[in-house]
Length: 287
Length: 297
Image (cartoon, rainbow over all chains, first blue to last red; front, side, top):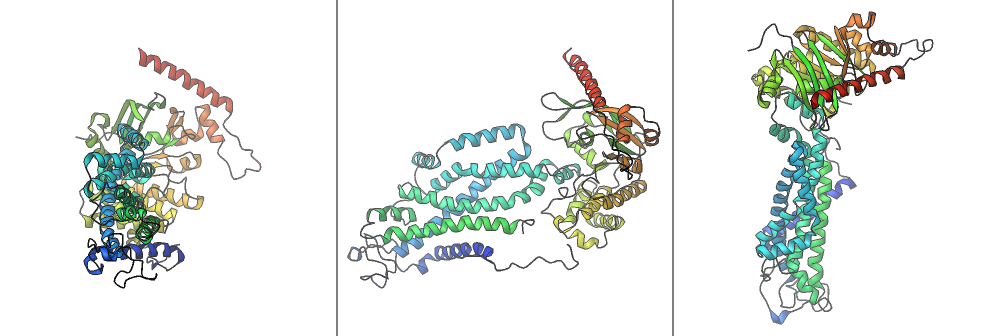
């Protein structure tokens, strides 16, 4: 029912919304930590101190007050390395997800709306692409084009654009069937204008949801590539390389492995939960 | 450029085909004088909507015009480049769609959806477009036009949306409106009101209307001429009074007989006889055979 004093309903605090707020809280914390890393990190992430190697975290006997989450086998502070690692993880996830999203969604929109040969070529390309095992493909790609953050971002975008292309193509096809698209065309709108102003806003919630999901995936892929030493140089602190180093010392210094793993897990979980929550929040009809 | 004495719409031997060569419209010819309402009737799949889509240039991908001519205000649409054709159609025609629930973009406010074509194609100023839109919303009995213009489609009822779509279609005073079963998705009480509005506005603006329907009751109320279709073929084309008083074709008679009446308890429902439908399908088959022979020669 429509009443005369319509105003958007205020966002109510519900369990459903908790699924939106908790991930957001974690991600915002991470962003603040990453941006102000030099302020928050208690130590230089690269400073080694062989006198203080493998110190346990604060809640275990034998810990040192300055090292909250302990130190690794070279005496580097785990918390500081995690905070600096968040910088790299977030940087990669944002840039990679947006490049992947823009590239994949553009192809998806074109295939879904223009149809015909456009659709045939793009869809077959997606099929071929998805036949490659993604992680192997990424490792191979980075091995060929060289290591480094740019290569990692490039590899993610080049491999995962199919996720966007597939979903956005399907959504575009659904929207293109709607009468309002015909109406816009009869109203004299060009095809490109119809696509951008009529169809794109309707598929935007899906793009945003995928974008959040993709950020989580990018964090994992970066960690995997760091783990096998194909990302940034091994001196730089990344969660992946910390996990890789911690793996060897798991029996006597489990904290070096566990804390970055928890950070990684929470970040990926937050991004995907956030994606789902945002999709619902943005959809005027679902809301 | 346009001939002032031209018919609003003239369709000559129109054939619309699927990519596999199957014809959806078979040599359809019809014309529409300025200010005239022509009903297109027939059962589902008879090609009623396809005619409107062909005229407005919104045939679904893959479906195309394989033969025939469409003249809009005396202009041969086939002879134009796609861009000019789109512009010509936009300047002269409008659509009242079947389903008011999908005909408005759910993420855009109503206002710009109505005024955009007016400023874009007709070159009106924003103020003029808005004034005209308010005037028409008032004509279709929308009490609070400013609030409606600021609403999203899902905030309004189906009947309200259909009235908005009628206002949007008539706003630029187009020469031709294709009304594609505009009352099918609405309940009966709203239907009557919608028909009355279309009739009123059509008389005022002198717009020619191609009214697609399967409801013979609606045909009697709104149209001056009727085209009866079956299987993409014109079965009968006659003034409305003649269709009801003296239908020539057996299928037209069967369609009229099949219209339910209020005293259904005393008069049994009489569907179109299967023998007649089989006969019509045989005619279509024969026609297709001739067509393919013609094509392969």
